[in-house]
Amino acid sequence: MQKTLNIFISDELQKSERARLLAEAPTDTFFWHPHYEDQTEPPPSDFLKCQICLGNVPPDWIALNPELKWIQLLSIGFGEYLHLDWQQLADRIQLTNIAGFFTEPVAQSMLAGLLALYRGLDQLAVLKEAKQWVGDPLRGGFKTLDRANVVLFGYGAINRRFEELIQPFGCQTICLSSKTGLDDLDQALPSADVVVSTVPDTPSTQNIFSAKRLELLKKTAIFINFGRGSVIDEDALVQRLHDSRLGGAVIDVTQSEPLSNNHGLWNCPNTIITQHTGGGTDDERPKKIEWFCDNLKRFRQGIPLLGEVDFKRGY
Image (cartoon, rainbow, N blue to C red):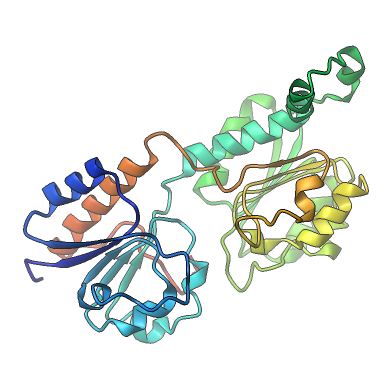
């Protein structure tokens, strides 16, 4: 392994974060660049001479850099990179995400959103903004989570932690992997009080919650999606929420982000949109830098990297 590396940074780092990287790799050369929102923008010349990239660069850049050996994403999701020819690229490039990084905050966000709907906090927040006191008439519409039937679709670290968090409420859980046959999912949905999806964006999960499958849910069910927006038919979800054929939704991810101003989800009743912030914490950024520094040590030592993507599994 070469001792001196060129490292491309595609993110707006704070001064302290840059200092941490320079302290970790004082002999390496860093090229500081912003996050590139425009996926059609050609790569800068700095990128083409780097062996390592930190950040989610446009996918089409990757094959253009013959020097590239490792990309550390700053996300768990990597759906935008799936179309690349990894059978060829994987021979020379390692792709790592930050799998497991958001487990605790996401699980807590899912529980917070669910309890907010059950206890009417979304309605009360609107009334506060309007300075409108309603009081007693609201009480009969509130629920508790006690002994709810909960379907956990995507039984990875996040849903396993969520299951632990809801145990004190005496919930009954059905845990299904995204690899589980859809017959099992279809059998579980009609009795579900809550459905939680945390599955990634893969060809096999896209539109898995189709209009037909959403019809299986009872009209009081709560749908929670903290995986990827591609797994659900958003138009069908919006229609069911507007028609009171679904009890509510907590949505962290959408098919297109940011959500357009005229998207139907904004006006859906009993719906909380957390704007892909479910994993956010006040120490998120420095922890991501530490993750990269740990992996950089591993890269130099030639030992397995944390979060290496397994393209055979699809995540």
